[in-house]
Image (cartoon, rainbow, N blue to C red; front, side):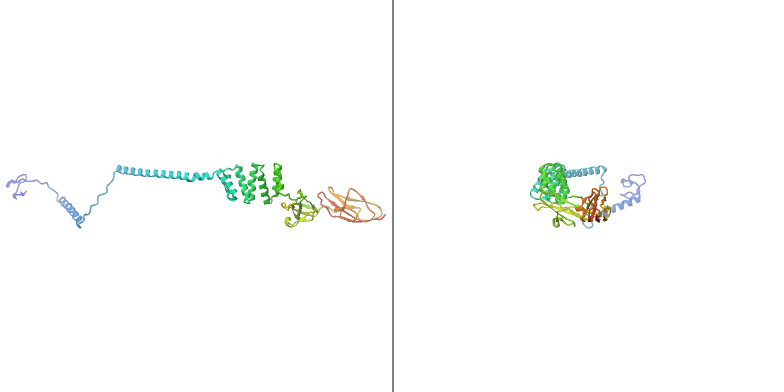
Length: 388
């Protein structure tokens, strides 16, 4: 070892220089590689420092990210959730207050205006102002609110009648009549509605329901009874005689056989109508002394050839010198009529009750058989000469 002060050689183990007496500092051995690495680290730091100030502007060194512990994260998350919950709660309160406000301002008045009493009052007001369509809608809404209310049912029927929807009017007026069977006003509306629909049958049925004389009189005021047919429509054999009658005082009956309207094209009825073979539609109407017509009634008749046979007469036609009795075979349920002058026995004949004597001279015997339905068979004609 060499003394740093005087350069003299110092033996190992001495702590003072023998020449100058300088104390010797013992330095531990070190690794050359470590020394070199340490030197480089110092150089790098100095270099980095020089680069930070190379442009004359300080460049701050980015700080490493701070890693929060689990405890810190949990506390932060709890705080955030609490804030969110508070905001949601406030939103719900605000929404609730809006709904309450809307209910007070809008819903309650709306419900009040659509209550049964309010609807009925508005409907009656609309009816009084002749706003029948509007009144109908309000009465219907009231009816849907209370389907057992007579006032609502009658109101709906009355308004359907006003707007000329007669089918619907009949439906609701009939329901109203079931609740108040002695309501004269309902009868009046029903009669006219049926009349507008041409449903005379329903008018007659309604007439039978009249609970008192006052309502029964309504029918004579508003309805003229149509003619009645002596025979109903259908199929008949042989010639048919049809009579038309009416129970109206001082009235006339007009009819057609070609399907035309008797009100405008009818023929005045004065005697029974003869219907011959074929199909015929008879239409008739009553006209009262005020010039008002009843509803038109009609019947269709299909007439086929009579099945009644030609009468069998004994003895037959011929010349006789002695008196003989004439007999006619009459089927069961039928009648026979005869004449000696050739006239129509159906109109002018004498009913056959048993054999009768031939008459003197030259005569034409005419005989017809008529069944229980009034159907006449072919007429027998025979020349008889009796000269004693």
